[in-house]
Length: 117
Image (cartoon, rainbow, N blue to C red; front, side, top):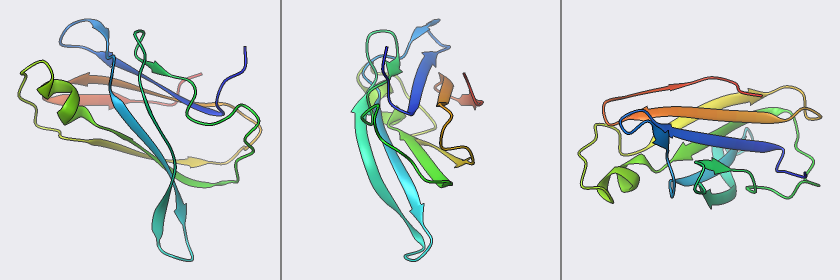
């Protein structure tokens, strides 16, 4: 199975289910511009995963990347108040040949993340 070199997974701890239809944006830090440049945008599927942000053939450079989850829109769709309108996870990609997976365990009032496999 081919997949994007960077993927993510959202789990909604409030419901104990995958966070489906969460908007996701992937950006890379451009040190020359001192800002982030958007690489891709997507939405989590029915299993809370976004595995097609980039083409499987994409070769990434070492650097600093940011994944932004549109959590405010996700909770608003269920009429749930949240403290976090977006969750931004900034991470360093050191090994371009490896797959990077960014899981997000989410509730309206907290979140946790780690480097997944």
